[in-house]
Image (spheres, rainbow, N blue to C red):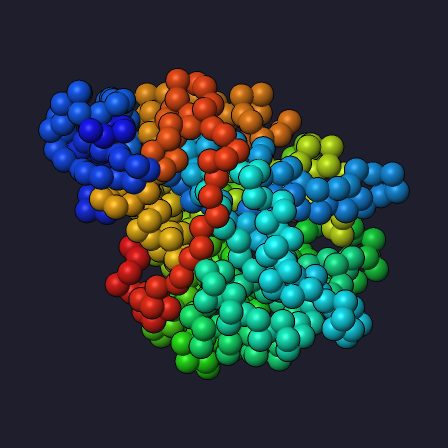
Length: 488
């Protein structure tokens, strides 16, 4: 007797798309058989997906919940971005069942190591924000900022072995007000050596700090400070230089592997492609806003809603991202989720005070389906790769997550391709705005299942905050050694 049986004409499995019955028992996929194999009385609940697309639950590898947003003006709004309760609920409505956030170590101040925060303390602090407060499954990247004391670097081995194998670092302070975020290159070298031995993965925000800060100074001096000039500050040259420098460093360290976050420029894609061509295990993530918006959109009304760091780029850069995704030089599409109210998102209007991140986790799966399958002819397998399976493979969750396979967690989403709709903030569950307002999509999730429990069905939410589980991970040796045979 199964707990749940989902029948579909278009079930996307690691071995192709077909008409299958997917049987669930005790939270995992217990059997997959030809459509109609199992009788209705063999399951406590039977759901017929018809011609809808049955796919693994989406995985967003880049979100920031309960993340501090400063007040850039006296008396302006500040505080934390929306918490896991709200973002995970929206994610499930949108067909995403796993989120990966960040456990950030506080940087030391002025070289005073006593003021820094260790990795274990950062994880425990983040657990206070997430444990028992998330409807879906989740994990953390460790985030290191600023000068990283040797004692903190030494902690990384234990953290990787304990199931926290991805470590984020910054090669820039991003804005002048965030001095101390950038990690020195020598510290990066030491961090990479530890990660390579421990089996970890470097997760990189790469921009050239000298170029970025020079451009802030230049535009300040010329009184050209409107946020619509963000692409001049966080420019393509910065991405090109920083990607190539960090890749060169990593390539000298045996056993090192990289995941480049929020790739925004064609130059970044090219740097990744060249390194992959040399056989180095490097992977790339772009964001759905980079794929659909350009720096021209900053000049639209409330143009700040399209922004995250690094900036939106040109149409040429956007085409470079699409080319990289099609070729497999980019593997994942995330959101850089920072869910906040419109008033907070619009509080800044200068190059140095515009709030990054977006409320985008709910429409991500539908938007990317529309842009990849409908508009560009991607296969359903390729679409599932970029919104789910590749993130699972790279981040050490596969095949528990990201696959419809026997033994995998029963995380399932059904996209109804007959349900065309226009995205409206009033219909979503994240914030009072969406950067996708007015966007027409060719499908929408109508069923989301997390480890065998129906979380969204028939326009109703059935989740409980006790449902979300933390996912400890280990990066597969194949991902760290050779990418060419692992990912489409």
